[in-house]
Length: 454
Ligand code: SF4
Image 1: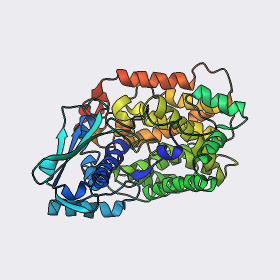
Image 2 (image 1 turned 180 degrees about the vertical axis):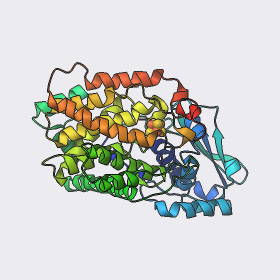
Image 3 (image 1 turned 90 degrees about the vertical axis):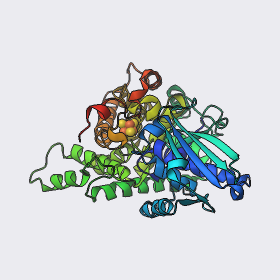
Image 4 (image 1 turned 60 degrees about the horizontal axis):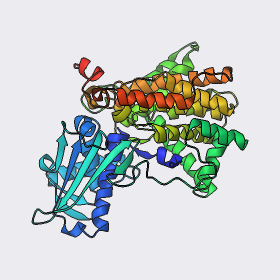
């Protein structure tokens, strides 16, 4: 086990974890590298090059903006979303940026931020190269980074997922079967096992405070989305819907038996509309799929009999355990395995989290996670215009409802299911690798080419 839930759930900004959060972190890391190697003062020019999916859908996903911000020393979890436009405006007007937040260098976007649409670096479809030059145009430093999904980055030549050290935790697991074996063998719920593992890495009070902080950011994001109207940026003229869904529910003179489903739709769309607008979100496990886990969490709080605010802790810990299995055994990158790796994984996490929060046996939690993925297998990533809007926003709402259904199916009839979580994770990964790359976050196929005039 090499991942903490605080690596998986990251506070960042929209619209994309792989195309916004990851590149911003990589650009910031390059600035730190220059600083740490005492090359910052000698740097007279910096250049960023984007490859593969980052080049093809980078503009729609805000990768250009993320790189500029990261080179300027900003970080996804601390940058003020309301200040971003002003920072970018200054860089673009002055044709200069403050590298690593300290050292001014000229920056001409046309020459210094290059999109290689037809090239893919060998390590991953989301590749970036950063270079720094001195006053004689000699290269001082060049680094390649990959944004491997969910805001995670890997620097070429080091720190790959496989070489990442195992965490020193009391109940390590590397598969769903091991997770069940460890939890059942020690008479722990999956969330309790995760809590003990996290508490081996940092003090218990800090673990609980960070979980509550994650939930408060998710919750605030939902609230903002539920109270905001308008057109989303990017040019597709997509109108926000979450607030109108709520208005319709509240206007009904008689309760509709499916009011709960409408609420879940509104919760999920609220988050993804905020994400599409570049707002503050939590990767769960990615930005494109950020609406599912918060939506099902709020469904738990508002609709499940006996739910308590403290139930959010088992909810997020259980969901995190499942997300880690996908991260370490398959992929959570739409550019690598399609949307099954984003919305499919989020559905699997939320279904398991809901079962865990409701006190279901560990076997039912595993089953809920399995169902949540089984019915997303093969789902492609084909965002129209390269924007994280269509199909992404609705897809989170549909996925959230599916997660609740998966939990209900798994918990209403225990035992005897034929497909294990490990089998479905393996199937998802193999299917993703077999999928043609034009269906994996390139906007070169699917809805992205068949819907041109919206
Ligand atoms: S289609 Fe799915 S994987 Fe692709 S950008 Fe949208 S949410 Fe992410």
